[in-house]
Length: 227
Image 1 (cartoon, rainbow, N blue to C red):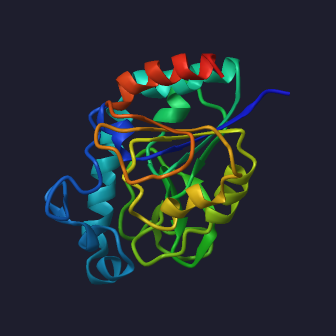
Image 2 (cartoon, one colour):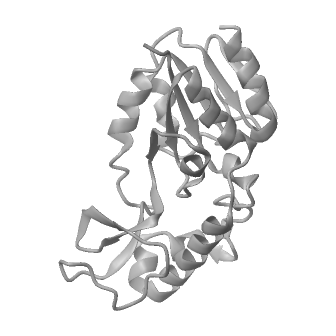
Image 3 (spheres, rainbow, N blue to C red):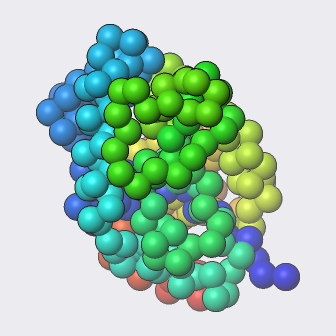
């Protein structure tokens, strides 16, 4: 049985692949107010704008490549039972070769009906107004927007509770419910946090690595080898 290594990743790990973080400045995302393009209210007000926005993002993600941090986590599968919980909607962990990835906030390459959030479909191109699911509902990105329930948080909590080692990479840990996952850890579990601007975390035995993900992953691999 391999040691279970659970990793929580956020926007910081994908930023080094050229994907902008969710809120780079002033609550704007690619020039849009996030609530205009990532909320049920925004969808009701202007669904075409929301679809256009995610269609652009889908193309951005398609062009992006995994960086050294994504590849490093995939490499750790040789020695550990690695499970990744990501707040990111991109597929860079999968492209790097990681086998167990839980997307808390949905996936850019999936779409679903507005009438049924449990059934999704793969999507590589664009979603347009008038594109309907089998149930007759308009198709929308299978993304968790502000104000919507994060149903996969229960599965994520169970994964964290089973962790033998826990790592946080590229997230500020201010967005709930994801930020609360650290409270699910068993006592005494070795924990690491990697970010160029470290989030507030206070746990006994916590190792802080204040570096970008692509550099911090190397320090993490060295530290894990000593455990």
